[in-house]
Image (cartoon, rainbow, N blue to C red; front, side):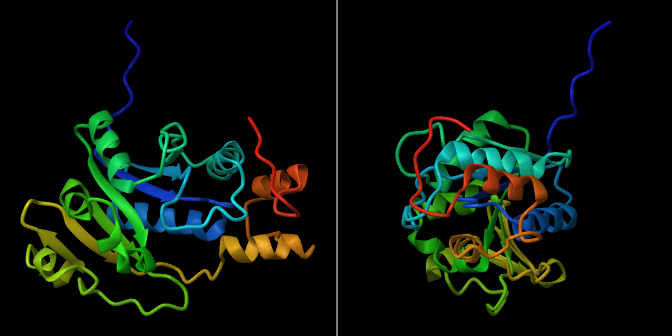
Length: 231
């Protein structure tokens, strides 16, 4: 008797970030996007060297990967990938999308980004190719105006999309789309969590219990971070 193969992934969400540390707002965002767009899987992709962020207070890659693994345990729709941690150099979204296209040739890819990231999209590496390589999912962010608009994109790029009001999305002439999704307004940030840890304040209920235990065990963010070979 042959073992049955797992079902093919038709709709794959890509959720990148430094996850420094991963917290409940990250998880809730991924859950709501998966539900709204009927994703088969959401792939959490910790960045090794974010091109738009300072490395200040960035925990070692194995530690951030370990925290994501602990945070998503128990959710069959969530997975974590070390694809950017294993690749040398800066972590560019287009390089990750290209590789995931190669690995999941039958899947439609959905790159999940926040409204703040969307406003800077035109500064991203090969952003024009990104618009045609995958769907973009733009989520609301606490304290920021949520506008369903392509205004952050150059005029030439905007001209290639057609708005579909019923779905709150812009469809590209190649078949991809930009989806705008308002999600729960959980005002939790990794920087605020790190600040609370530094001053000895509790971060319980801001991060999953497994991540809270990891922070305590490894004394992360309490002082100068040390690079570790594994976690």
